[in-house]
Length: 185
Image 1 (cartoon, rainbow, N blue to C red):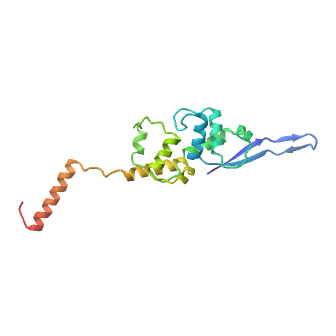
Image 2: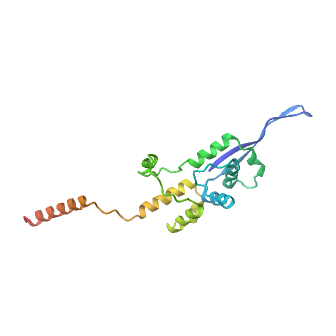
Image 3: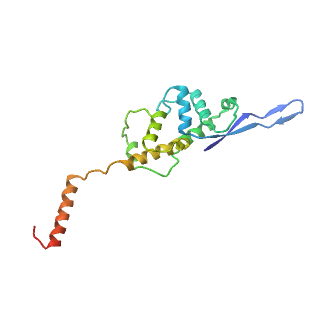
């Protein structure tokens, strides 16, 4: 969960009391989850997880969709600073897990993924197919996607041995049997 402190108003001068009025801040709690993703996609009718940059309005609205704090004045989102947006973007990119995959390094070297657009409905489909409880929709999205990936890896059938490995295995078995039965072949 990300806590974001937003400055609602800067320091002001009260002419009647002749004193400075301190700035006002509000802290809100955010979660980058499948729930927030689906709210945003329902409004904007396009996939959030795409390489296309979001407009400032779309970014502000995603922060609104991520908000867990109740009864937040909608005007608060107009006061998001560049630092607030940077914090949100870092939080969205955070993997939130210690799990990694060996091919992650090859992805960075130019390996392409399938061209499939990932949307909230597709992620819900994966969850249902893999029997992942719906409570996980409130997890950080990267953590949920990692769990889905782990389930896919663990559910894959074991790979066939190569021809070379099969020949070597049979040769070892034959040698063991010859030794066991004191035979020459």
